[in-house]
Length: 244
Length: 242
Figure 1: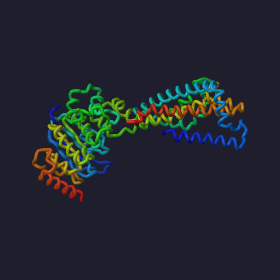
Figure 2: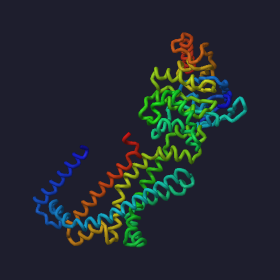
Figure 3: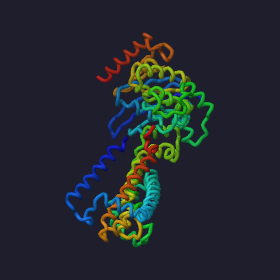
Figure 4: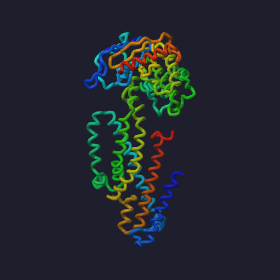
């Protein structure tokens, strides 16, 4: 039932799109109609599937590595004052630098293949994961810490039994953000230099004025991102402390 | 449990140079309940936290010692107004938190016995969110008892409960904490009158010891002498504040 309004809005938007195309009579290389896009999508489904698979692999590896790195960094920062003093300013500085600007150099270093895109996805999600989990770790309810102190708990035990579990809802929101950002990172990487992936396919189709194929690839990317977001949301439900 | 020692606090506390409480001397008699009664902001929770070795934000100049000369902090159990139950852990996991934090094997026989005594055996696998406020405070009490410390510090643990549940909890706490040295910090004159073997009113002026009613604790809620003591304590609180 929850999806009914979203579905209705989508159908409505497609309808408006078709009406604009019919009324204005724009050429198909400027704005192809939804029917044409659907037809192109079906005809090219094998090609689109192949490129989607590549992008999906990049995004999933990037998400895994980025999340792991972010979690490890947040724990380091939360447990060591020294790390906070040294690393935190750098972390903020890396965010001041647009990730887009790094894409060409990453492609130069890591090549045209998978790893430059994985690196882009990692870079783009590293900060939101680190920062939300770190915030959660630093906001442990002080009463829990008092209690642990009267129980003669070691800082390590407090971290694993109290601070980390108490910060899991924050980590969940970081991971949900990461699921939205990771495909952006991978596609930017593909734009800068690639021979595979949905970003590459979009660029290729655009260059050849195959706007219908460009739209088909773009919509596939959109659907993939939404599905990824839903999957990560579901996977983090328990972590976020929802559903009980 | 080792025999409960008496505790003495002597000293003064300041926050950024401003006096929080003037030099005072508070003695907790061994194996007895001492109720420290006072309004908000007089520093009564600070006294409790100092004994527990917790951070207070105040500078304390003085000494805290046990009558047997041993260390105080490791022998202290603590219970706050907030039940401080971990929401992701079950009742059982919350009760054995101390052992888990120290990496020890929890005493399961003791756990079973305590669950029975706080009447939560049927709720052992539940999460705190599934319990009522009174049940949650009973879990917190069981967790405190699981630690088996001879000195128990209670920081307004019953003040968020409704009147009936509060009276039930007071009875249960007296029964289960018998023989331990207890400091109860409260702003409720009725609670102090029901539970204190000795009652001390804390205000800006310092500590004022008050005679407790003669009856055994927990005193009956409708015991006339207890009610009179409650009234006298409230009057004293109001006079001290004026």
